[in-house]
Image (cartoon, rainbow, N blue to C red):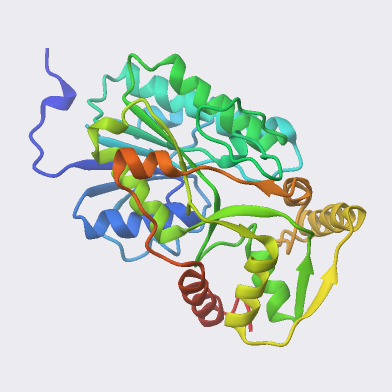
Length: 338
């Protein structure tokens, strides 16, 4: 019987879900530089501005609809980078439908079609591990205790992969706090506040950070290095930054005099709820939202990221200041901040 995947192909073929997003679009840039044959799985109606004029194929499908992705995976793929997911929604069940069940759909289609994968790389989140204490750092081997539906759904997606570990050669990466050009969420709020002359004081919180261009190098290493198969890696700078240091660095690069504003917990939650509601009504991007307020209420996100250094030889090359400089230049050029 003719095997669909016996066709000769001199280039390694890659499928990327979530390719139009912040991290996914940067990954596409790197994969194109490395001369992979790149196919992007996109939902109809998504903005593909970061993908325009790239030497890629765009195919339309929805990971929550298994049949819609069956037609996408009709050719051999050597690598799949699964980044598609939901970061914010006012319906908790949507996190699980997209992040967990969507991952299951994609994995099952690969198995049913006998896709000859070298690696399935899943971009999870440090939120799947959950927050740390004030003085300890969490490792991949520590018990996961996510505190939000987003984090819980990401952990559930990881469990799906482990259920199929004998049939899918996967690697899971849990990025810490990611920042960089094209990011409209999370840490972007710090840049917006600083550009308007304010520096939020959220107390003595701490977190690892990772610049997006460093993260995408880690994703590619996770796919290409054999020893990464079946492993979970936290990805971020080994250095842990205070929220104050983060705010000071952003304010310093932006170059505006800023006034420090102490934000009590109740104001944090009220602001997140209000801005999220306004954004839902106006269909705009919120400066801040309720999920981010919940995350930031847990002030300590301290992780030991040495495992990926030891096993894959991955080291971030961007300092916080250098990464922030590139990010500020991009935000200003695009008119996202002044």
